[in-house]
Length: 139
Image: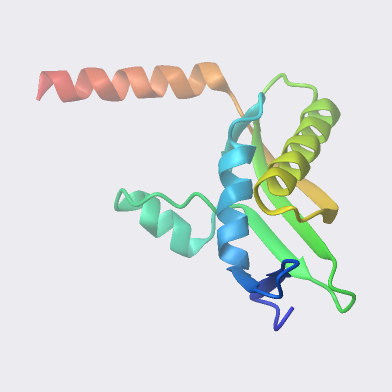
């Protein structure tokens, strides 16, 4: 591995493939939102501004790090749906992300830390979406 922003893969023929960590974060972010119970991912200022302007930020809520021993560690920041079993959802998230990364890159995450940053009440979110849709119809 050349630095902390890319990961270096090599194959039997001696060729090298460099993958930027942001690409891996995108892969993991897209996989995370497909797990039952995950409502959304926590973003930062940049991803929140992108969302405001309608630009997707699929890697938001995922931070990957490469340690001195070339081990890959991930921190995942999620909002879960209210009422889900938090330990079960976190465990499923860890399993899904490990599988997805291994399937796409043959890389293994040494550690996946799931940070639940909030709960989302699905019924309140649906009712606010419906009222916003009704407001648009009236205009």
